Length: 482
Image (cartoon, rainbow, N blue to C red; front, top):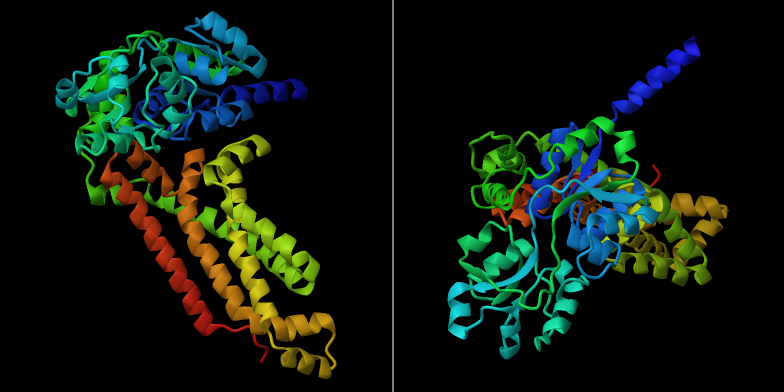
């Protein structure tokens, strides 16, 4: 009987597990993620980055579902040409343990846009017209430049003579086109800023872009594992039209509302309140973000000290090992952070704190290893001979003489790593690890300086506090034996 009760309680506990909803790092995805999490009583892990990172998180089981678009699934995930229907998409997704469904009700396709007056002056109304103006300045998002259904395919389909431009964050591109620094940008057709900046959306006269119907992309086990949550998702089918999505995007991007408040419009709730700097800076999430940021910095720094100092000692004591050790930690430092995060998500099978801590630990190694090596190799030969003359063993010489003499250099390396980690930890928010980077990611998505500064200023202040703490410690403490 007790065994049966245990099984019942275990099943009940499993049924109560919240569904984990992810979202990409742009306004509409944030809002849809909030709507999904609210509808199903789940947890939202916002702004996880581009398609590759969110997909890796989904496959690893770190999230269970996220809002996606049929065109993106076809072109980027399963590589199907044309406009495949959901049945074809699901047949291609099945080997990956994924499924797509629940059409939310609107199509948000890619397009290129220009300022109305500039397009009118040049007589540009269609994408094919761009080929007659090779000197036009393009400003395209990084993801659009790299996608099969983005710039490479578009350039071939229309024979565009323009070179591939440098990537530009989607939110910043609107400011750039408004200021005249670029003339053509990629847009989503539900962007609220299209009307605000008086942009002309160019006609896709060769029908290059497929339909991008908003759907849910989820792990195939979700309907069975989260039946209540999935039933709630099904109730959203067809309930969000294009006009309503534009309205919610506008609430976040143009009216200064939070993503939560913008998503509340879907339920007919109206929440007042524009983002103000002080209220945003010291908002309800301030202490949570501070705690998360400190955990990321201090835990990764402690691990890098434990590993980095012995590696530096090994590099100093074993000349043949010096170059491989210093070369390895130097190479790690050159790996782009988002690429490393994506690799670690696949490696450890989760997003959030664990891959973020591993990445920060790896990035913190170089200053500590190099400064430990430099401090030990800088000790004069006379000091080493004096220690030997006292009859000290090798271990005693290292601990009682060499490390104390190298301590200023070692501490400088640790301080450098700590300060760098405070800044690097902001990027960890792109994989759901929290910290001040959450605000920075949101601010970039909204192109909102208030939210950006509310994340950047605490991070900068924390870096200054960490540096001051180390400098105070250097003055008050020493490794020299008394």
